[in-house]
Length: 290
Image (cartoon, rainbow, N blue to C red; front, top):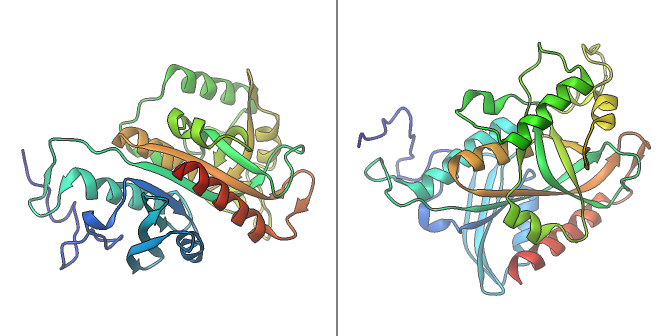
């Protein structure tokens, strides 16, 4: 077995993983990820005890216990590019011997739950309600860089997506990827389930116009109108498809739950989205620690 080169596996002087700045013993196997660094402390305030607090750039990590369960909560920042860094480094912490730069013989699987905010793409999904992502629809292109096999069900969704939306072939190749069945079943109560579209940006990629005209002016309408059997695209955000795709390839479990803070077709927005996020955090922590 060849050692991983220092150019590929980058460590800090204290042998912590480069961007996360963590050591393996500072990480739980059950991990909550959020975009906003400020949300980490909001969640860890519910913990009975906190053993580790680490901050590096936009990545804040708290690890502790709640109701006897060891948990990590970590901020990723925004976007699938950050998810690429965080997921690869989380995996390295548990599946690579950092000291010797060798892959471990025994694989460790993590449970990774994203708690986020999102915009609804179906008019009947109410602001301040919760959506769980049964599938991620990657419009971001990240998984095209990896050896990644989609299931027959996911490929059928992709075929139907192209057929129904006439999605431009000049854009990155989309992909569908399903959530962890175990985590989905544990977290789905009280949530609307559906397909979450993951964009590579907040403005143009999600159909917003400020000063730059869009090449695709009907992206939101095409996503809204897509149907395949019982599936529809419920919401738009910027992380889930990469979280699901990388977790699948690396052998981890992942699931996303989001508070809906705006509805793109009813034109409504939350009057107090922080309260909705607080309720989602409490609901999710209760389900994870039962």
